[in-house]
Length: 465
Ligand code: UD1
Ligand code: CA
Image 1 (spheres, rainbow, N blue to C red):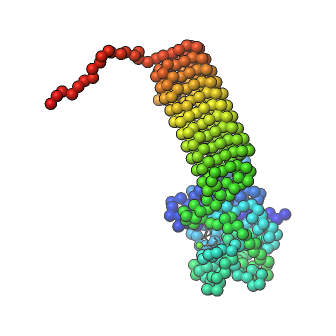
Image 2: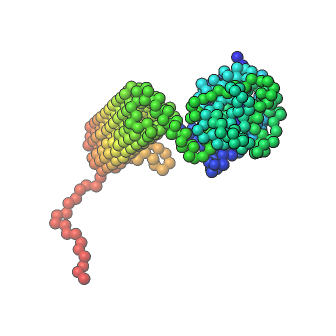
Image 3: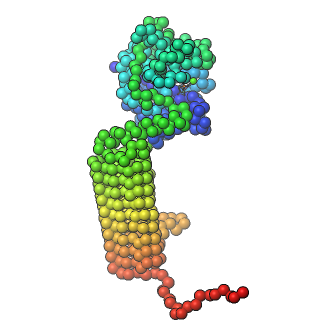
């Protein structure tokens, strides 16, 4: 087995993005372009991974360092300043590459390449050959063209250096190659910038290989999405759609019923059981699990949550568990227009209705908060009914305090529960009460101004003019 090293070129400016953010840090499906490439590379168990940075180098390197998984070595960096072309970019990585093994050269702005494609290129290189990945482009303008004599690859000519005949060739170089390190180092040392762009072209090594009698193979891919680069906001959006469609298809193949795959967005990982239904315009982020028979209504945003079997998420619900997570129990109903924040833990059969916000609170089996309410830092017992307009006053301006509502409590509408406070089991709180002290089990607690009715009350009248 030949050792594999990887060089990812990420020094270019990305002028057409017209952004202050370095191009490779722009996001596709919630992750930076470069993060996608590194994720794919991870599957190869490469010996070394070198990222060539230049424009926004410090920002790119800091981002890469932040993505590193604990216990795993991160990539190495080679700075390319100034940027004198792709050949020059790889030259900067040479001191970090051993003399044996094969180097796979990738672009940081081509995010959707898949492991099997890279493996295919490595297999074609077979420890001794220069292997290129090519693709047929309906409009090849701007790309390097693959020149062949018969079947054999002879050279790559860049668009700006190509003759009219050469420009008619539709087979182009994708920017992916696998090259034995020893040969690569020799060829890079011989590059010149004697061309239309006065750049050191990596692609010039192909004719050197042919001159030296080394074997050159071009592997053609039929999957444009895998080799498409991002140069502009439009291309980013197009690639995002292509990727989302792929994810939606994969889920539908596993039985998920997605109302419209063109209106589905997954920016993370979605685990699904059988008979899950997802209506239009839903966004899933981070890690989300949907249990058997879960139904998600239109226009929901759901991040970092576990939703158990049979739960129904009605339209326009926003759920974000962030680091603490959100859990929704079996057969629960949430929404429409509900908001579940980190640490919301709903037991089975819980009902959470419209304009209800829940943060860092546990609701036990069968508890209901159906309208216009806030529960923060609360422990809510079984079968509790939490009235419309009620809130926990959990924050005293400095500290957060817990509210405990024991089993079978009924909280009347428009109540304020000033934490820390406990409402005893089976108790009732009269509507519009402000509860500041613990209440005994079974009691009716009322804390509001007594009602007064003044008979025959005449409202003030305007004085006649
Ligand atoms: C390059 C290829 C071309 C191929 C095309 C596929 C060369 C000379 N040409 O075109 O044959 O069809 O890719 O997209 O290689 N970069 C650096 N440093 C530099 C220049 C570029 O890191 O000095 C990086 C860019 O950030 C980018 C990648 O290299 O990730 C490719 O550069 P780009 O300018 O997009 O490609 P071209 O040179 O136009
Ligand atoms: Ca260029």
